[in-house]
Length: 255
Image 1 (cartoon, rainbow, N blue to C red):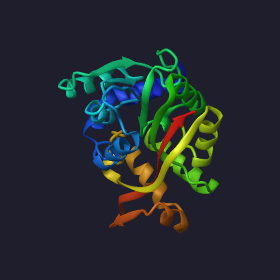
Image 2: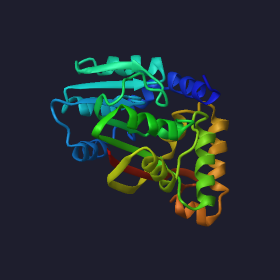
Image 3: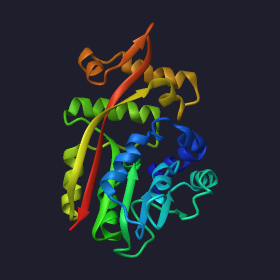
Image 4: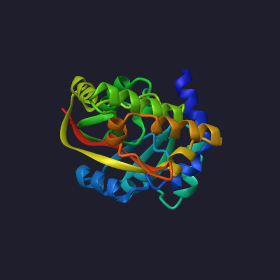
């Protein structure tokens, strides 16, 4: 297993419960949009990749016949399965997003939300999504994205890595679109929006030491006015209260 993937397992094993309760991950408007775009059918079999706290898997289980919820981290899956034990049509599988243990063209729907920035090889991930999808199957992804401007891209991915060592890289939309096109996924709907994050909840989810948390805060506070303006850094008495990042929601169909 690569160092990047081991860091993911270590981080999410330690913080499994916080991803279940996270206000960011529980955001119902995200889940409602994914259902609207998926137009799920009661006969479908769905796959939720890197399920984390299981929010998408739980929502989709209300609309489809069967959901396979996968995650690289066993402890995360075990914790999530305890929370979702009332959902009897969800099956939990330890799986690497870049090497899925499923046969070709098996799923009607594949979803992945707030996770791909942890994947070392996003091209392999998209290739696997396309492989396991049925023809005309649907893929829905929601994730944090890097701005197209290189300076902002660097700043964003740097502070994410400081806060969470399991972060690999958030891609630009232009980069994602190349991967989709290469692997025969045709975009049917997309939405770019701004997502405001409460700084304290965000930074303490992965960093325990006050000194490490302050180091991330100092990185924000030392940034240029233009960068702070782009990320809408809000402060009270020299402490950061919130900031805003870019997020992309996309629906695609396998051609």
